[in-house]
Amino acid sequence: MFRLKTAPASEPITVTQAKVFLKVTNTAEDALILNMIKAATKYLEDYTNRSFVTQTWEYYADEFPEEIELYFGSVASITHVKYYNDAGVLTAFTNFQSDLVSNPARLTPSPDYTWPSVQLSRVNAVVVEYITGAAAVDSRVIDAIYLLLGHIYANRQDVVVGHQVVKMPQGSEWLVSSLKLF
Image (cartoon, rainbow, N blue to C red; front, side):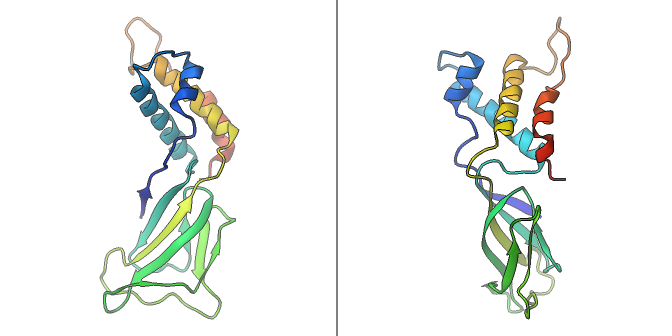
């Protein structure tokens, strides 16, 4: 199981940048536009299975698998690997090797080590905390966010009476399709 521990501190584009793109000159809809940026970003992150901006994730398991796979795109670092030992004490495990080049990133015990035993019948006895996201957001992602943002801003309801029903723009998916992990 995966859980977002720390959400991104910022979005890939700012409200000011979005307002220039949307040709909005007042501040009355700034909060709405920020929510639309977040919605567009989340949609594209879910579509590509990637984190675009730095964020902290946690991986949970009831026991150690042979290999731990960490999802959501480029893993920048492993904060820690912890487990509940046989006595029920949360303990750090440092004898692991990480492959942060592969997608998904992988963790295995270091050579000559095995994963430690965990407390029996303990739910989520293993927790790995890690950082995902890139220092700079890919320009295709930015363009796709702008496409979705324009669509969401112009079409604020699912159906508008008297107008043709339109689907979310496929151009945004096309722009990021090569970034899709699985």
